[in-house]
Figure 1 (cartoon, protein in one colour):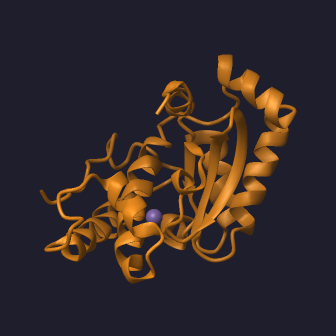
Figure 2: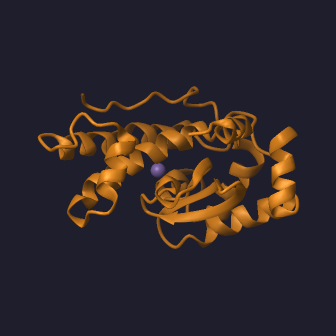
Length: 200
Ligand code: MN3
């Protein structure tokens, strides 16, 4: 069974003016689609064909000969997770249990915000900024290229794609401005809460 590109969970213009339909068009239909297509080609005829995406990620992660499979499989997972990390009219300070957890583990939302922005802006080259849970504690991490929290014993709660293709059409080189709008207008806190409650 070949992998297919999952649809965006909202209309292509839903995140405007913060992320344009043009960016989502390229990012979803060209970049994400290419990872799906490459993955299908690379696993065809191998023992990984027909396995779940998670199994393929774990099976390829430590094998240098399978780096291409790992990179494309992880990027398929990362992008699907990223689309759900965004929503129209999202962002800002969350409420309820999540705010309690941010207060406890980061000494408040402002400190969380500052640390998340720092992680995203200082990831050298392509990669991701994450809010994760590790051993019961919320943490901010950054990963390079396709690397992802599940490989580090962490549960992903929110992802911010900081590859240039995520923001260049709208913000050119101003990655910090893109991370500001991500935090203030786009983060899907409901998705983070759902991930936090999910035991797997
Ligand atoms: Mn991307």
